[in-house]
Length: 323
Image (cartoon, rainbow, N blue to C red):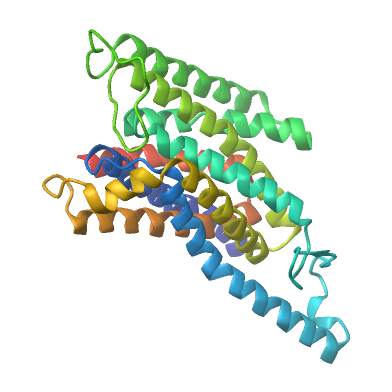
């Protein structure tokens, strides 16, 4: 009885920890965009992915070394019950349980989802982004059904429809009741990376980016669930961090060099001091790194749908942090 209770309470508690981490990352990213004039999704997330890779790639190498040593000494007893490592990472001698091509795709989807959501903070508000992220739940259900033929009850489908209705109301509110009036003569060119636009067109554009990010997040969460259950968490996190660092670095070098330079060299110290800049960026990297680490533990024991249901409370925490 006690074991069953523990199995049920553990995901609930872990889900709330993940919600708190997600809300803190949203606060830090939103403040970086609005107060420090920084919206460089690839740079911010490259710092996160590089931290993940620095933690889990060495752990993966040690794990593989111990596995080989155990096989030699124990005749394969060390790897009994673990997935076979039949795939090799190109240009290395590191063997994986999943083809590297899957990790390349997963890391790209993760970078794309984070890029869209972080960039949306430059155009719309934290509240709108948090509400739009709720649509990840119906999208997770749709991807689970399309890819894995998962079944859902009518009540679950109805609640998914309620999420869609809520997002439509949020976008409609930004269209008809923007927080700041539209400019009488809006510029024909979109705001560049590194600026904050809270006007009429910016709010709608930010909502669209957050919505596209939710679609990508949903697909990535479903894939993460399957990979974590069929391979190993350390392998998944190590390869995700390594691949996503490369993807983020490539995008940053093409689109965000000038914005990163302004952030570190030319930013206004009166509105965003060096300590505040470093603290906000450090908070973002810390919270997202911890989020990834615990998120993979969650989907190993539960499902991607339950993960996103648990994250709904992050909106409440976001409101609390802003009070």
